[in-house]
Amino acid sequence: MNNAARDTRHFSGSYQVADNERDAIIAEIEALKEMSARLLQQRSSPNPISITVPTAQELSGNFSALLAEGIAIFNPATGQPYPNNIVSTPINTLSGKLANTYLVPLASDPSTGIFNSTSNSNVDSTQYLVKIDQVVTSNNHLNGRYSYNQDNFQRAFNAPLGFYAENLFRNQSAIITDTQVFGPTLTATFSVSAGRFARTQIPEAPGLQSLQDLGQNVPLGTPGESIFPGIRANISGFVDIFSGGALTQDSTLFDYQASVVKVLSAHTISFGGEFERDRIDMDDYSYTPGDNTFNGERTAAPTGAVLPTGTKTSGSALADFTLVSSHSSTKTTTVKPISAETGHLCMRRMIGSLTANSL
Image 1 (tube, rainbow, N blue to C red):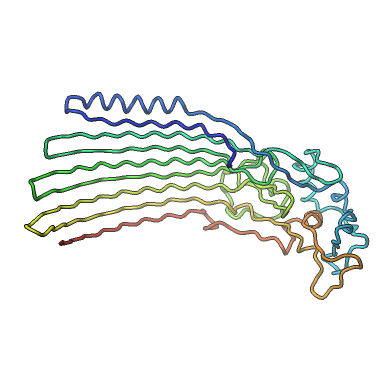
Image 2 (tube, rainbow, N blue to C red):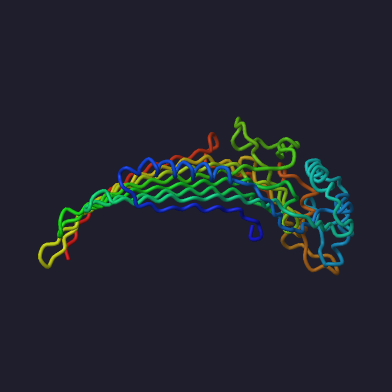
């Protein structure tokens, strides 16, 4: 994300007006809103990435090249090393579908599996700020602030082009403050503020196919939802077939404050009160499709096993991927969301306080 281009617009204005100019203020605010909407643009600046995918030899079960690196591949069923690191069983059906659908078409280097590409990194930001300052009377001052920030970006992963999570952020905040001077020794201030902070994450993948669509025999953690749940199959250290998860977050905040300051001879007395009301609504389906990771543990030497002569370590994430799919791997977990039925979290909070000080 560091190299992603940003298209940002800032709008601000400050007004000192009389009562008969309020209509003009409203017209200016509406004009700013319309202008920012028209200037909302999408720009793209993909970041270069390098991923490693299984070679044709490895997809056929031939991992003999790892012997030159001192790596042995063990049979998880027998606990014995595969002779010459050649896996005799055919590639797992689901792993084969994943490879043929997303990895083989990349035309990576046939000897190393390295594929140089770019990631989805569109970034789009729009901001504006409206300020109002009004002297109502010589003893009363009213001011207000409203800020809006929409920040949309594509959250990229160590994955082929087309796998990303579309993130949409929209934050708004407003505050109105009124200060009344009742006399040389008495001042009161009242303020009301509100904020809304929303986020939506949308998983994206070529063809919008989940592992379940490709044949994984594991039910979704949250069945019955009409969303693309995303796809999660990560080959540690090599490539991720990963799109993030679907989620929405929407929080609001309302805050009311009042304070009175009175000067009595050499003493200053202040009284105040505050009431805050918060709300958070969230639907999180991040782990609805399950979390599937291949890290080399499946084909590593079991405890107490002797490594073949000439090798110094064991296990390969790529070998794990070709041997076993998530629905039968003991090294892969399927994690359900917050609630298996709805994936919904709702929180309400109200806070009040009173203060009194004397100096």
